[in-house]
Image (cartoon, rainbow, N blue to C red; front, side):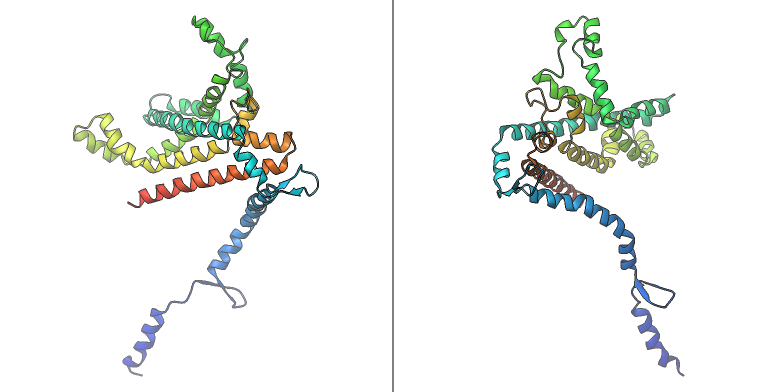
Length: 317
């Protein structure tokens, strides 16, 4: 057979590769995408049962006047109308926004400074890294109980320190005063979660080549100039990720506020999650509580989705 007789067939064979498949013992070919889906299926099933289904079920409950017992009465969007006209709900939304802004503006800069400090690897840096990371390892309930005692107006450590410094005029009931309760909780939130972002930034700093700093030093750049021109631009993606995590976490924050104040005094620390819990499980208004939970989900989804879209567009520039 001539060489020219087999060449077209050989080229045609290589020009049309077979789709990615796996061949079983019986010769049956299984597409790789199907194999991947079989491995993912258990996790998808659990996610659907414990996340997706409750979301849609909560939406259905929000359309009913339901106490949690029986089927309830269908009332359409009345629960949503009541929530959107409720001053307590909007106060909770405002407190959530304050918590989001404070979390991003306080946690991320302090975490970045601690990450830069611990990346210098001075004597004993491992001990300091473990100490700074310790608050994140504690349970939120334990943290709340500890800080309740610290803020105690009579026997609390904070008022005791102020008294020892001669600042008795600053002593007060930190969690019992409407003007100081929310800032006091924000301080605890930052104290507990700054270590998480600190570790995130430390991981990002380890990916920056040291050659860049050496070249900048040779060119006469100061440490501050190296930070602005090298460290900060290369950490921009990590900073965006941290901001998105802080935003989402602050919108659905619940446990620490519930332990420390329960939303008081006089609703001054009320958040959407605490308000939803009170209405659904304390007042037995499951339908109305489901409506608040649905609005919380919508707010978080829209804000987080918008942030991710804007971040993606900036990254593609």
